[in-house]
Image (tube, rainbow, N blue to C red):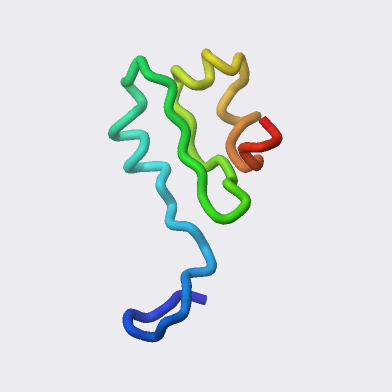
Length: 68
Protein backbone atom coordinates (compact mmCIF):
# COMPACT_ATOMS: atom_id res chain seq x y z
CA UNK A 1 0.00 0.00 0.00
CA UNK A 2 1.52 3.29 -1.08
CA UNK A 3 0.79 6.49 0.74
CA UNK A 4 -0.69 9.48 -0.98
CA UNK A 5 0.74 12.92 -0.27
CA UNK A 6 -1.09 14.60 2.56
CA UNK A 7 -2.78 11.46 3.91
CA UNK A 8 -0.47 11.09 6.89
CA UNK A 9 0.15 7.37 6.24
CA UNK A 10 3.65 5.98 5.83
CA UNK A 11 5.12 4.01 2.98
CA UNK A 12 5.16 0.30 3.74
CA UNK A 13 7.98 -0.52 1.33
CA UNK A 14 11.36 1.10 0.96
CA UNK A 15 12.15 2.64 -2.43
CA UNK A 16 14.38 0.66 -4.75
CA UNK A 17 17.77 2.33 -4.32
CA UNK A 18 19.82 -0.12 -6.35
CA UNK A 19 20.04 1.89 -9.59
CA UNK A 20 20.88 5.30 -8.04
CA UNK A 21 23.41 3.62 -5.74
CA UNK A 22 25.01 1.76 -8.64
CA UNK A 23 25.36 4.97 -10.63
CA UNK A 24 26.92 6.81 -7.71
CA UNK A 25 29.00 4.21 -5.89
CA UNK A 26 29.94 1.21 -8.07
CA UNK A 27 33.19 2.86 -9.13
CA UNK A 28 34.06 4.23 -5.70
CA UNK A 29 37.12 2.87 -3.88
CA UNK A 30 35.27 3.47 -0.58
CA UNK A 31 33.14 0.60 0.79
CA UNK A 32 29.50 1.65 0.58
CA UNK A 33 26.31 -0.05 1.74
CA UNK A 34 22.65 1.00 1.64
CA UNK A 35 20.04 -0.37 4.02
CA UNK A 36 16.28 0.08 4.10
CA UNK A 37 13.48 -0.16 6.60
CA UNK A 38 13.32 -0.54 10.35
CA UNK A 39 15.17 -3.86 10.17
CA UNK A 40 18.01 -2.29 8.12
CA UNK A 41 17.82 -4.80 5.27
CA UNK A 42 20.81 -4.49 2.94
CA UNK A 43 19.60 -3.34 -0.47
CA UNK A 44 22.93 -2.36 -2.05
CA UNK A 45 26.65 -2.98 -1.61
CA UNK A 46 29.39 -1.74 -3.90
CA UNK A 47 32.34 -3.85 -5.06
CA UNK A 48 34.64 -2.21 -2.47
CA UNK A 49 32.32 -3.33 0.35
CA UNK A 50 32.24 -6.86 -1.07
CA UNK A 51 36.04 -6.88 -1.06
CA UNK A 52 36.15 -5.62 2.52
CA UNK A 53 33.66 -8.21 3.75
CA UNK A 54 35.03 -11.02 1.54
CA UNK A 55 31.44 -11.83 0.52
CA UNK A 56 29.60 -11.47 -2.77
CA UNK A 57 26.67 -9.10 -3.14
CA UNK A 58 24.39 -12.16 -3.46
CA UNK A 59 25.35 -13.17 0.09
CA UNK A 60 24.85 -9.66 1.51
CA UNK A 61 21.78 -8.17 -0.19
CA UNK A 62 18.47 -9.06 1.43
CA UNK A 63 19.92 -9.74 4.87
CA UNK A 64 19.61 -7.54 7.96
CA UNK A 65 22.79 -5.50 8.48
CA UNK A 66 23.03 -6.73 12.08
CA UNK A 67 23.49 -10.32 10.87
CA UNK A 68 26.41 -9.50 8.62
